[in-house]
Image (cartoon, rainbow, N blue to C red):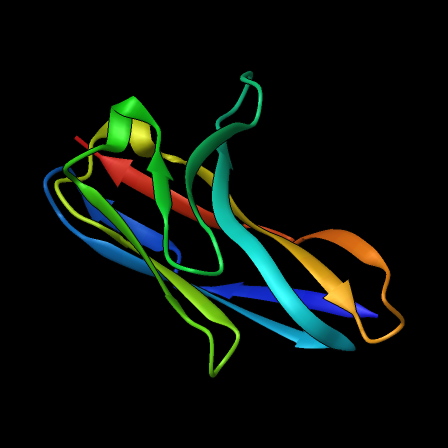
Length: 120
């Protein structure tokens, strides 16, 4: 089994910052791409940022220049530094990982989500 646990959500005023973290654990042979997605009420889940095992990143246009995703392969963690937050950034943020397990199975795992609220 492979799990991910998010932390760091909360409430902030527009223009403020938050940092989300995600830790992967379990029968991990190798972690591949990891990332953050978000879902606002009444909207579909959307990609926020992803990072590959070698550090290549991709961001949604709406967060470029404001959010930064990083990764610590030694700790199986990723983080999302969110600056200049806007009310439109309010959503439940989900950590996602693609991993190869010790049984050599490729799995995709989602966290339970962490709520980010941004007040104007």
